[in-house]
Amino acid sequence: MKHRLGEIADIQAGYQFRGRVIPDPSGGMPVVQMKDFDPTRGIDAGGMMTVRMDNIPTACIAKVGDVLFLARGQRLN
Image 1 (tube, rainbow, N blue to C red):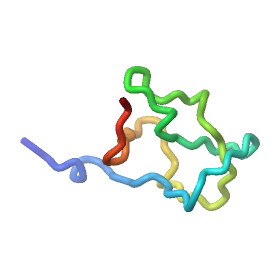
Image 2: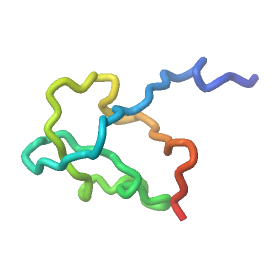
Image 3: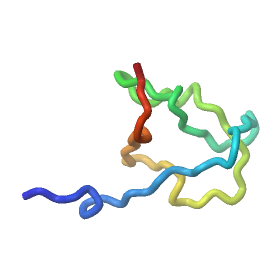
């Protein structure tokens, strides 16, 4: 039986920064970007930049078990 993805999972767009992402090493909120993704190894969590975010919606924070998809039109090669 086929199902649409939205019928079996919650779909949430990530946080949309308004402008350039400004790194803050003491910020504590890691940001997943295209450059952090490797098609073989997955996400390089050690290389992610951190930012200071006070009002980010909890739905925009990735959790263990979440599946992240690359934005439409992005290419890794």
